[in-house]
Amino acid sequence: MKHNDFYKKILDNNKAWVEEKLAINPAYFKRLSENQTPPLLWIGCSDSRVPANEIIGAEPGDVFVHRNIANMVIHSDMNMLSVLDYAVNILKVKNIIVCGHYGCGGILAAMKNESYGLIDNWIRHIKTVYRLHHVELNQIENETERFNRFVELNVQEQVYDLAKTSIVQQAWTQKQELSIHGWVYGLNSGYVTDLEVNVTSNQDLDEVYQLKFKKL
Image (spheres, rainbow, N blue to C red):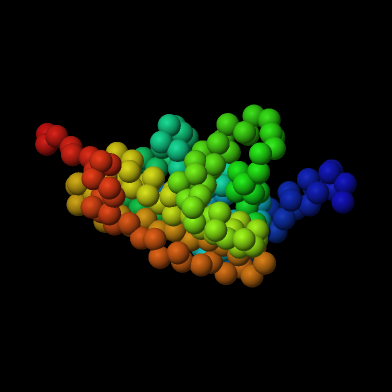
């Protein structure tokens, strides 16, 4: 399909989607435009095959989404922190899901030593996860199994890195209901695997990461 054909097709798809929604509910977009109260923040990979809403059968307005390569939570990433702050403190989401996926190109790149250009600087953060778990990972002889386990361990680390942020810890200090979960999506099956890495308090963190906030 030529580029221009694809471009026209997605515009036509939009019109068809609007007409389909209006046929079911004439007030659909009016209601949607008034406010958003999503119960969930999704931090996922930028991979085009992992669309957050479709995977969980959610409607527009149900999920607040942040995506980057390999679903990373980097403490100095102002984009991620801004999304997190808005989701937690303004939208008052009750759940955050970090969703990785098997076959992730960012994870695969972090297992190798090739240079890919600018993205090397991002991939370095993923390599840190490998370093933290190298004993377990290096014992897995099958490369595919090692790759899959690395994907899972990366999600696990991002869940804990979210819990370490001052944004999340302050919400917990204020008795805000907030849980963080780790999932992995299977590209070849469509199913998600709940890694059962669930963090609901900074007591789940090593003591060095537990922040104490001054009372106002």
